[in-house]
Length: 53
View (cartoon, one colour):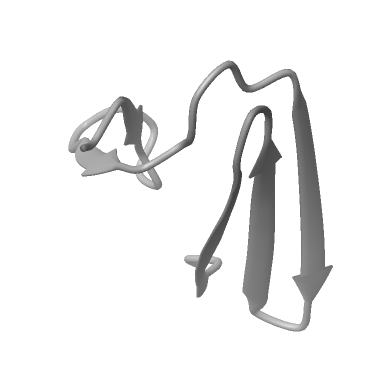
């Protein structure tokens, strides 16, 4: 189930993503041009991607 949306171009385009249930914490780790994001609530979800130029 997708329950959140992500944009990487200032809001021009949006992509549905899984975020988890009852999320109350986010952890984002950036390394070079990549990131790993964790959403923490009743579950832990991990999202990864590339930081655009």
